Length: 171
Image (cartoon, rainbow, N blue to C red; front, side, top):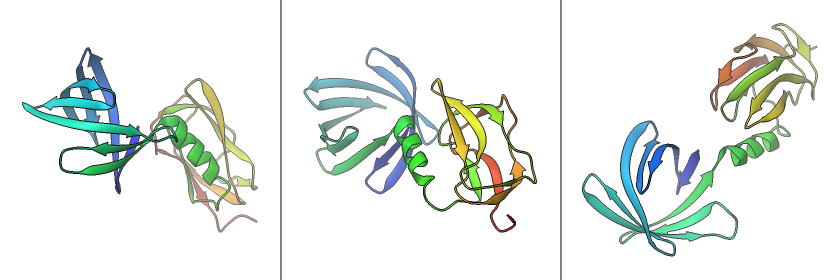
């Protein structure tokens, strides 16, 4: 999941959890931590022999937190795959980019175009299945399919380029 910590954006993945022992990756770096919730909203974190305490204050708007430590305070916004997907869907109404990327991991179910095809605004280019839902990926302006970077049945990662578009050559 994507986590915004102030102005920093971190990619965090939970690898495993057994009791209080948690293994996770932050921007690809593996961390082993021991996390205990000591009282409502306060947690104690043990990492590499050092102890950290943090107070988590959840906002009314879901996955936004104020995190207070002894010496600093951070605004944290958790962007899970569903929130990221919804944000990407909203962006479809904006101007067309020169590529279509997957906002989250999934599987290519159907490719409805081929390289060189001219597509019109609103045309579906491909279908991706993620979290047991199928999503149609459409173009928001007339363009030409420049390159298809995936095949039907491929597993795709978040932010992976699926299709490259030529925005200037559409008739």
